[in-house]
Length: 277
Image 1 (cartoon, one colour):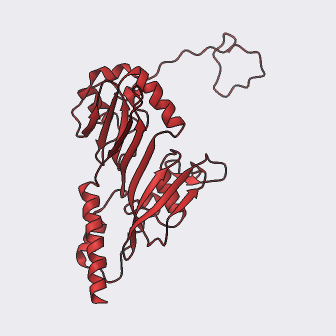
Image 2 (image 1 turned 90 degrees about the horizontal axis):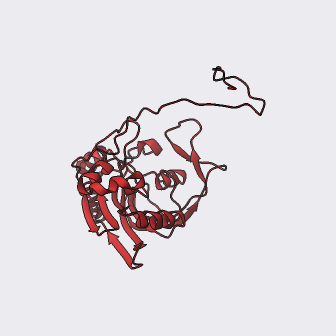
C-alpha cells in the first residue's frame, strides 16, 4: 500500500495506491484429455449433446481435479480447449444423470450462453420423491446458500428467484415419480424445492431424505431403497434452437438402470398390495 508491504487487515481511508504481486496455483486440470464414459447423442461443428452418467463430475473443481466430463470432452474433441470452460454452458450435479448441451465453437458458445441466461433452453427432469404427492404444482421460492451449511442451498427470502414446475407422473404407496421443468437454473434447485415442500428425492440425504419405505414392503423394496445412494434425479429432456442454424432440436434420455430398477420395484410393490386388497 503506497509502496509499503502492509498487513492484510490494514485499514484504508481512500486514495491509497494498492499493488498486488500474486500467483495462482493451478490444481484443477482443464487441459488434460482423459477417456471418460459418456454417450454422445448429437454432434456437429458447433454443438454436442451428451448423456452424462451419475457419478461423473461435469468440470474440475475442489476435490475433483480431473476425471471429469470436461476431461472426457477434451479427449473426444481437443479443439474444445480453445473455448471458455471447454464449451460448458450449464451443468448438472455429479450424482445426477442425463443431458447436457456443450458449445463446440465460439459462435455457439456465445449463443448458448445467452440462451441459458434468458431461459430459452428447456430442461425437464425425472425424479422419484419420498412421500405420495397428491398433485403437481409450481414452486416459486428464492434459493441461496445455506448460512449454516455452506455446501448446501436453502429456500431463503434474500435468495435468487427460482421457479420449478412439478408434474406427477405416477404414484406409488410411499413414493412419487415426477417430472420437473426448470424456469431458472439455481444450484441444486429441484432438490432444494422438493425438500422445501416435504418431498425430498430418494437417496438425497443432504436435503432431508430419510429412507422412507411403504408399510409391510417386500424385502426387495427395502434392498433397492437402501442400495440407492444418490439423488434419484435424471435430466431427461433438452429442447433448444441450434445456436447457428436456428433449427429446433429436441433430445430425450431414458432413465438409467438404477432409476429404472427403482421405479420397477416400487411399481411392483404397489401392484402386489393392490391385489391383496
